[in-house]
Length: 156
Image 1: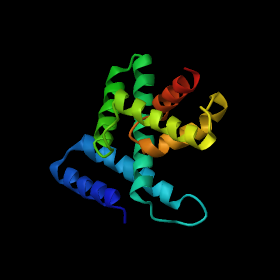
Image 2 (image 1 turned 90 degrees about the vertical axis):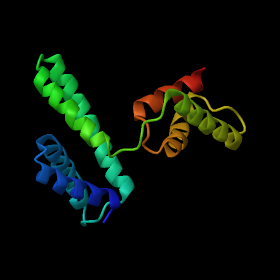
Image 3 (image 1 turned 90 degrees about the horizontal axis):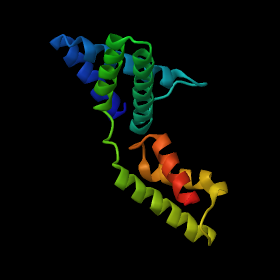
């Protein structure tokens, strides 16, 4: 079993004992999403820690989007609840990169691709640069931030 999944389960048990309803609800939802991912496809399988992180990242993103939707509809209590759930799950994810760190990693990806191609990549090679940049970022930044920096570096 993945270490991260085991940690989630242990923390869930502790939260149940401590009667922390927000943490219990958040962890149950995350573990349900992980289980769903494990049984999807043709055969059931165990997820690796990286795959569990991807599921958690997706769940945090869902919470953020739901909070924005609730806030836009004037439902502040539900928006706050969604944000709180997202914060609980964010604690299990690696720290997000700063803009400077992300800019440096994207620059490294562009430099490496420039060395491979023999010329500076243009907008048509954005997919290749994104692939290299995402490998370096390893889930420590949202895809939209990475894409924006890659696009800016290829156009500028």
